[in-house]
Image 1: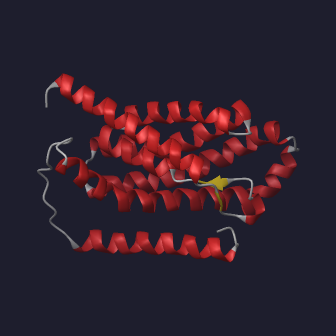
Image 2: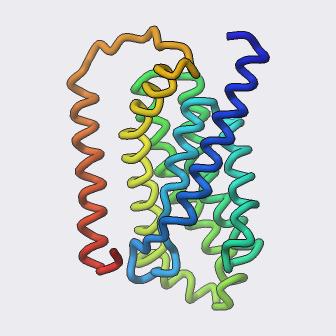
Length: 220
């Protein structure tokens, strides 16, 4: 693919992923944990992660920044909340984007997604401890009391659900882009078809468990 054409395709796809991420963040606001029902899940990070897998980590980071800035007028948490959202998204999108860039195999994707789950969970615990008292107007002791029953499970479930969505949606997205001629056809042939099927089942079960929990909490 010529350099100019590749640049045009990258910019077009980045704009498309950014728009989808922004719209998803406006449409879906789902609380996951009763203890921290002010924290709501949206699938924005899954969309940006697919962008990182398709285009690389740099376009995904720039899209994350753009979407974060555009969301500011639509939110109520101001600049500090926007910073927290950006850190949350980057801590999930960047590890898988970097690892998959240099190891474009199923193993690389799985390792990257695992690292993303750990990264977002740990980093957001740290930043919630440091920053949440500033914009929530509560003591740091109050934030610490919410760590185990609230912030930890929220970020862990959020990252796990985004991992399942990313895995399930990545192949259909790539197939559609290749059929449209936007991306070149893959030369890699799948040698083991059993493992992807098992992983698909696991991801579907994760999403099903999430939906059951939502009904249990009566938020949908």
